[in-house]
Image (cartoon, rainbow, N blue to C red; front, side, top):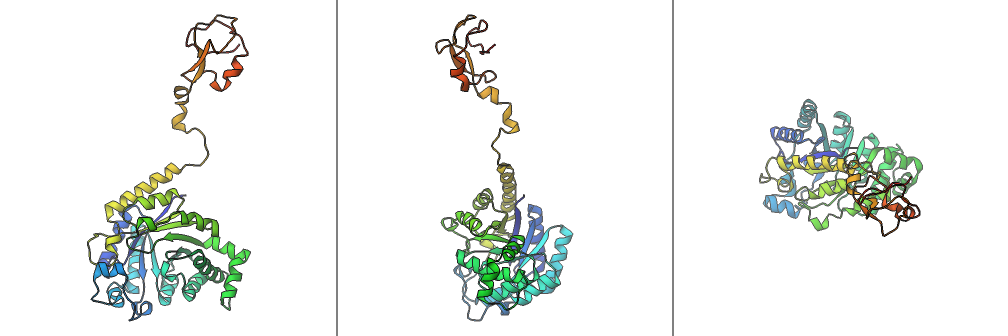
Length: 357
C-alpha cells in the first residue's frame, strides 16, 4: 500500500487565502496526496496568559503574545469552505486540524470531512477527543510529547466515542478500550503518528524505533509527522513501515511566520515524494527469492563442478581431478562430495562441466 503523504500547509498562509491557495498548488504539484491546514478560533484556543514557544520567539520575536501572533494567522470558516472547494478543483484531498470544539463541528458537520488529524497538543483534551470520535471520521492521532500511557488514555476516550457510549468517565473509557468491540473500532478508524514536537526537531530526538513500539503496543497503523530539517528521516520512516508521512510545506523558508523555517520548499518536498515512492518500490513483497532482474545472472555468478585436468572415461572422480569454477550451469558445488562416488562416463577435457551418466 502506498504511503499517504500529507503536505502540512498549517498556518504558512499567514492569514491570507490567496497564499493558502498557493500552498495548495504547491502540494498538488509536488505529488502530495493531501494538503492540511489548521482551523481554529484563536480566543477559543489560547488564553491571554499563554507564552510563546522558544521556536516561535526565535522566528517571530517576543513583542506580541502567542494569542496575538496566532490571531494574525487565522482564517475564517468561510475561507476554509473556499479552500476545500479549491482542493476539489485541483483534485487533492483537503484536510484540516481543528483546535477547538466549534472548529470540530464545522469541519465534520458542515464541511463533512472524512478524515481528521488530531495534533499532539490535544492528546490530553478528553472532551475534544470524545467529540471527534462521536462523528466517526478516520482519525490520525499525532503523539508528540507523549508516553505510551498518554496514547492509551487518548485511545480509550476515542474508543468510548466511536462506540457511541454515554456517561463518560476515566473508568468507562478504560472499559471501552479493553473491550473487543472497542479494539475493533480503533483498528477500523485510527492511525497513530509518531512525532517529535520541536521545530525543527533535533535528529537525536527523533527516536524512529518508537514506531515499532507503538505498533506492538496498540496493533494500529503508525505513520510519522516530520519536523526535522531535510528528507532523510521521512525516508527512513517509510522504510520502517510508516503508512503516513506528514511534513510542513512553504513557498519560502525565509518568510515571516512561526513555521516557515522548519518547512520544506517546493523542490525539496518534490524530492521527498519521489524518494518515498522509490523506497516503496524497493520494499518489495518480502519473499526471499531471486528477482526477475537477477535470474539471468545465476549461471554467470555461481559455479559448477568441472574437470581440473583431463579425465578419461572410467576414471574415479576425486579431489585430484575435479574442481569448482564458473559458470554455474552445471552440477552445483553443493554436490561436490556426492559426485566423488561416481566414475567418469566419458572423457572430460580440462574445465569441462562434469555431467553424470
